[in-house]
Amino acid sequence: MNYDVIIIGAGAAGLFCAGQAGKRGRRVLLLDHSAKPAEKVRISGGGRCNFTNLYCGPDNFISANPHFAKSALSRYSPHDFIALVEQYGISWHEKHQTGMQLGQLFCDESSQQIIDLLLTECKIGGVEVKLSTTVNCVSHDGRYSVETSAGTFTAAALVIATGGLSIPKMGATNFGYKIAAQFGVTVTPRRAGLVPLTFTGAQDEGLKALAGTAAPARVSCEGASFDEAILLTHRGMSGPAILQISSYLEPGEAMQIALMDGAQIEAVLLDAKTRRPKSAAATVLAEHIPKRLAEYFTAHVTETRLADMTDEALRDIASTVGDWALRPAGSEGYRKAEVTLGGVDTHALNSKTMMANDVTGLYFIGEVVDVTGHLGGHNFQWAWASAYACAQSL
Ligand SMILES: Cc1cc2nc3c(=O)[nH]c(=O)nc-3n(C[C@H](O)[C@H](O)[C@H](O)COP(=O)(O)OP(=O)(O)OC[C@H]3O[C@@H](n4cnc5c(N)ncnc54)[C@H](O)[C@@H]3O)c2cc1C
Image (cartoon, rainbow, N blue to C red):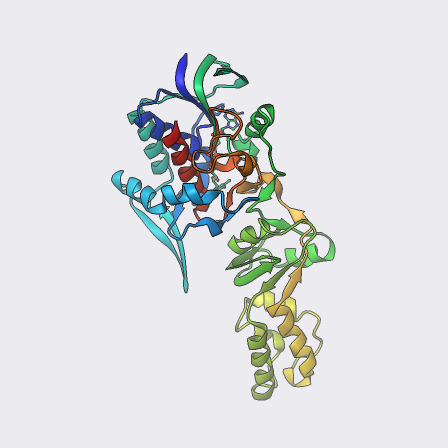
């Protein structure tokens, strides 16, 4: 019942940390209340796990302390994890999007291969894994004592790897934040990130009619801009560019969507008025953006021919296509979010070891910490890097 390290949470960060610490000769117990480990790894990347990003760096993370992630990220790089993936004979590919180098790496076959890798690493490290185990309480009296449904266990070090709040039906809880509070470690405010956005009223009605439409776009708000696809859905807006901006958009703030460069589409429409005066504005627009969006942006137009429209009216259409301002009412929340923004305050942790500055032997790793990655493999890279940094100091 006595260990060097107890890790709570057998997700990406907990499993990786356990394997690494075990391989360093530590006697490790890994606990999780779920019946299966790493459920989020399993569903990630559409079942193929976007396990890292070639271009992952500190700028891909949101945190109250933007410097915090630098140390861990530099000591365990995407190439380190790729080397491990290759050592296990897992074939992978980079996602390709026309004209864009996204650096997102996926398994060719299945995310289960990453779970098997993590479990094998634990096996090599002699880690004891106890699933379906409820943690009732934690106390500290020289050693950490963890009371569970499977008995009481003690260790010199306790690692909290219980993740964030997204997808509660997959086992997400606020356990990590509660432990932080119990030991006087501050926690920053949390909200759903990488999440589809919702709308209300007339805006909602108008957008719902476009459900199923996707388009490449530049989506921006104060302080951030992403060039990826948007997707209109029956609930609102999703797609990579919308998920990315959701992590930056403050509640009540507007975002701007550029489906094309405004000046470029203005030139196209004015030119078409001269060369093809009998064409409808929607027809010309639909040669550049999806037809349903072209119809949406010209729904107010009564003239059937460009020749009958004023240049001013065409400029108005162009400016909406180039700078479509939308103010979401909210998001689909933790039920659909990929991550939780905010968490255990990085100012209270040592960036080299992930240990709480004022609580000897208590560590926080992975998503429970206030370090949130962009979409595209960055969140797993943070899980690996923070777990590795922690394991080196255990
Ligand atoms: C649908 C979806 C797709 C995603 N796709 C990607 C992707 O392709 N690439 C990427 O980089 N990121 C992706 N993410 C984000 C990524 O999954 C997380 O950032 C990552 O899993 C965080 O790792 P973690 O180990 O910190 O937490 P988790 O993986 O969430 O693990 C936490 C573990 O703690 C356990 N736990 C929680 N509470 C308790 C408790 N009270 N007692 C005991 N155990 C507890 C949970 O059961 C879980 O096993 C995706 C997320 C979602 C939801």
